[in-house]
Image (cartoon, rainbow, N blue to C red; front, side, top):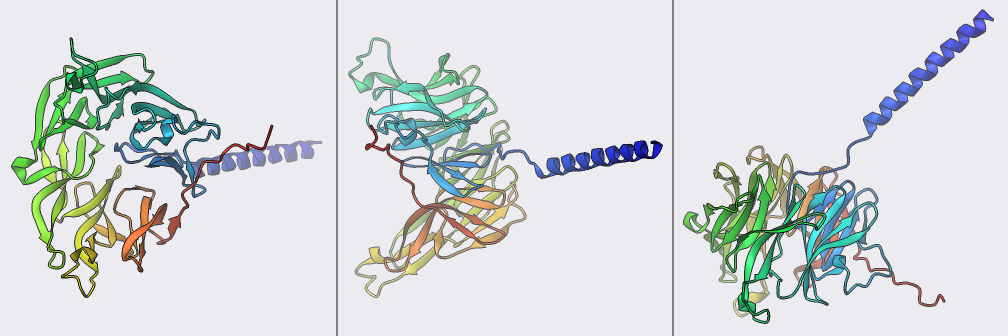
Length: 403
């Protein structure tokens, strides 16, 4: 009897140890869903999903490598669905929701909407009429608020006269219950980014910051006084700093097309100290800012195809303004290294990098037409060089044969 009791105790101890080891292994294998502190308007990414727009908004599942329309409702009215607008910009990700602004062609309205990533539920927080349409709809979510531009009828103005509307910087709570104005903007002033209690705007070659609390405006950086003309790319934000390519006044000349091509350089500006740094000496075509690295494609004037009669038809010369490779460097521009090269794919337009894989709009080179014209959403694994290609999906229509 005593022997059986000892064996039973030993068996129990072994079982407990096995359970502990099993639990520990599961915990070691599990990892937090992907998230990023970087803000931009081109993509939204969280967990296994990357959201991108191509007329309407699509979702790429990194775990299954499937590319689908973000709207999951087969009975949805496409003319009124916020996810199927003609223009979309991402405002941010918060509490499991993707926030985006869009222009609705059917109604000519501008929408501030959201998509619940878990349930697929889509809703609209604010609808702006055609008269209120700010034209440029960059907007950003920050600390429970949505910062956006809107045209507001001036006091005593005529609602039918577009000249009687003033452009304002506004904010609305994410529950849609509190809508406020912060300050009036100039007619062509555009919102570029939000961070550290400031809204960055651009007007006439100068970047400004607006203090969210009191609406005070300060000049942040004059592009025109420092050899640049305007931001060439959208702004990225991370840890109190903005990153962007600035279009410079220097150019590169092509003897075949007889055209000059402007050079763009990567700048970083601290929103608090106003310190400005040029991250890399070389001009770039595009870049992506990650939490701990910068991924970039250098500028290179390449003549891919030169016909014999190029002097009579310089428009037939196939020009590429990018090196056929993507590089990585630290946030300060140091420790640069080449990650991938492929002269048959154009991957410079818009992309994100998640866990050593590039995701974005890719273009295959067509040797017959001498253009990059076969567009698809896909990925490139830097460690293996594998290219992921997807087909552009169509929404499934409900079965009309059923009673």
